[in-house]
Image (cartoon, one colour):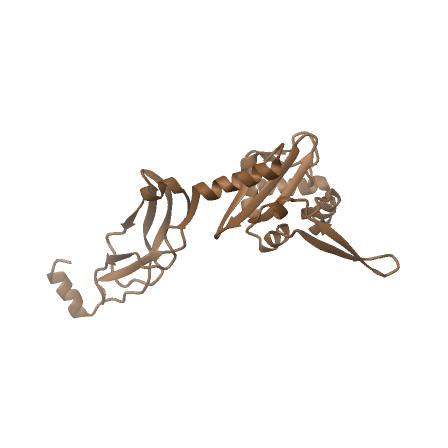
Length: 269
């Protein structure tokens, strides 16, 4: 993996493919199956290393989606951000061998927030770079294909992204954001919270246009267990939906005592 991801070893790609699938062609079949699983509609692999071959292609958008997926793997993310490493082995006479490896991604040395990912160059594709950078907890990915200045172009793309877009947690998981009425319980309300964080990337110019709306089932009745989805929080930018997250009960609400239910009934509940 070091030989593949740091120094762009095509021999490493072939070795990995043959080890996993038996041949480059069979490994490409696995690659295409994974591409379909990830919804990469404009990608087709014919080999594991990316050397020029008919009907072997990927779009910039698909590469961005693939990069986003790959960076969720901690081992992958930890490897592609290394500027250098060592490959260790054993010679025929049993003596140890160490070979220094230097990452071909120069952006790691020239852009202070860069933390990946991979270079690629062929005569047909030109100089390419799939890159990532993280600043103040916000990670961006950028694709430059057939770039005349892939290092400078990528840095300018990142500067543009960090300057113009903000990462916001619009609904922190577990935080009380609403009290919903409950019938027939020991309490007449239950706290609701987002089931998970709702991270959104928002143009900074639109931060003042962000609003949220809450929809909750109108028929909540005890007993209620904690963690039950009973509604939805939706975040809008103007009239456009940016995202939504289920709302769940933060605590349980046991059935009320008989006298409580009688009183509720008499009040028309």
